[in-house]
Length: 462
Ligand code: FES
Ligand SMILES: [Fe+2]
Figure 1 (tube, rainbow, N blue to C red):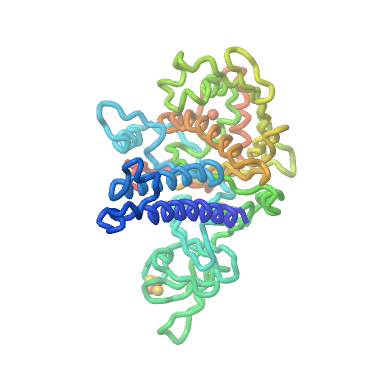
Figure 2 (spheres, protein in one colour):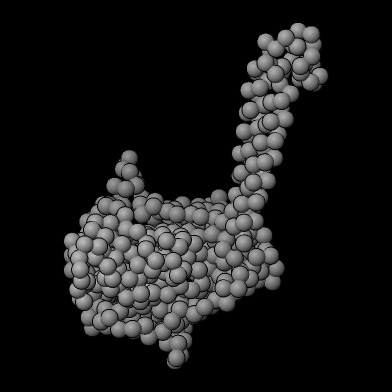
C-alpha cells in the first residue's frame, strides 16, 4: 500500500515536470519561424527579455531538468525509504599513504591476530533476505554460514531455502535456475527439486527418479517481513522461534528503510557490545555530527553536542533464556543543556545469536522497531542489517533520521570491530562484569560440534 502511494507521488511529480516542460516548449518556437519576423510566435515576455529562439529553449530545458531533479530529491527526502548499503571495505578502515580502501581492508584481514575464538557459527535463526526482495517465482543466491543456498519463492507464495549445488553434477540452482510451481529446476539438465523438502521430483530424460536424489532443505520461516533460516550444527530442529511483531504484520508500522554493513569480526563481538556498558560513554558520547571516523570524533568543533547513556543488560529467565534485554536511556545535551524532549528510551531485545528488536517508544516521535540482524557470511565476516518499521502516521523523515543516527553510532563500532582481535580472557574491572555475564549467556548457542575456524581466509575477495 505504501509503495502504491509513493509511486503515485512520483507520477504526480513527473507529470508536473513534464507538463511544465511541454508548456514552456510550446511557447518557444524556432527563430527561423516566419511568424518571428512579424512579431508573432513568442509570448510577449520572452520577446521582451530577448530569450526567444534556441537559447530560450535551452534555458527552458535546463530549468525543467532542475525542477525535475529538485522534485525527485524532495520526494526521496520526504517519502522514499532510506537505503544505505555499504560495501565490505567502505566503513571502518584507515586507508592511509595513498592506499585504496580495498587494500587497507585486505591488509587488516591478512595481518589480523584472531585470538582464541569461540566456535564461528552459533545455533539459531539468521535473516537471509527481506521479504520484499523475493517476488513470487524469484530465485536468489545467498551465502550464509559459509554455505551457498538458493532461496526461492514458489507459486504458493512461500519462501524455500535449499542448498545451492545440484547433487547431479553440481550446477548452482540459484544461477539460472527456474521456479516451476513450488520446485526449482536446475539450469544444467533440468532436474527439479521440491522446495518443501529438497526431494528431486523430475528428471526430464530419466524413467525413474532415484529415492535418494535430493538436496538439503534448510528450516526457514518468514516473519516480520524477513526470511530467516535455522542453523544447528547437529541438525536439530528449532528449539524456539523468532517472535512476531504484530504491528508489522497488521501494517500499523511500515517499512521506512534499511542499512547493510559487512563486518570483519567474530559474530559474538557484535552482540557483546550491548553488555559493554563502559564503551557507550566513550565511543558513543560525541554528537553524531562529529561522524564515524574515530580519529576525529573527539574534535573540539563538535564537543558542544553530547549523547549521554544509561544502560542495563540482563538475560531473560526461562522459558526465554535464549533472549536478553538491554534497556537504554538516551539523553542529548547541547552546550551543557539537557533537552528532555529528545530523551529516547529504547529496549533492545536480543532473540538468539543473530536477531535484535530495537523498540522505540517516544511521546511525540512515535513508536517503531529497528530489526538488527547479524548473519555470518564466513567465519569472520558478518552481514549486519538494520531494517526500520515505524508508525505509518508519523512522517517518514522521523524514522529515517532515527535510522541514520543509529547507523552513525553503529559505524563507530564497525571501526573498532574491523580492526580488533578477539580476547578470550579479557582484562576486566568490576564495572565490566556484564561482559562476562554476556559471554556465559551467549555460550548457550554453541554446542560440542559447533564449527570452529580451521584456516583463515586472506582477503576480502568478494
Ligand atoms: S547439474 Fe543439475 S541437473 Fe545436472
Ligand atoms: Fe557500540
